[in-house]
Length: 251
Image 1: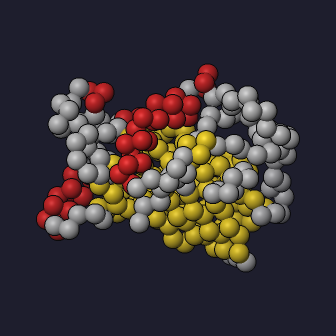
Image 2: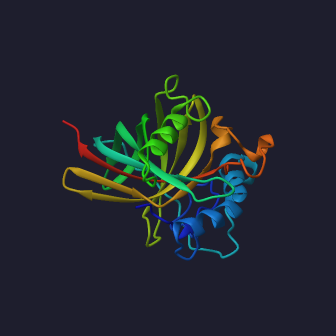
């Protein structure tokens, strides 16, 4: 199952939000959402990566308060015990493919029921395709995704997401936005991920809403329209991601 988001992330840069207001999108079937997401991707990418455009639209005059940093004194470290990244991508013509990657390890720092920072290591060699019934075609696509055309997993066997900023949210679908850097193929770019964080005893469960990345920003350029690929061969630059992670108190 792939999780379809009801939101599109805004740009933000100041730690001054008591509540983050997100544009609501109707729930859509995966394929329909993918087409809609492509139309909004330029807005998302420019907001995420261009500091000059990281301005929050305050025209609705939301209530705001200054957020005090969560103290690290007495903070607890949690070790990631399991996790999955869900992905979806498609050609310009044809149905999308979707699959998973395994979160191999990582750690989270938290205090008083709030995340402070953390990282997650993704095993790029674990990439799988889950929507193909023909085992031969499935294996062929998985091998191609691991090749130099895409993620070059022999040279870059891991990906990593590291975050040092967490903004709380009162959105019903998620209670925080983690802001950090995603590293793939040796290249790092900023990514903002809306997540629902649940603390229960010695455990932390994290489930994200879906979010978009532009694969070309990490040097994954095979059959990109930006490089002039023919329309019938073109693969969309937009990739849709979501994730689930479980962590347990260290020690």
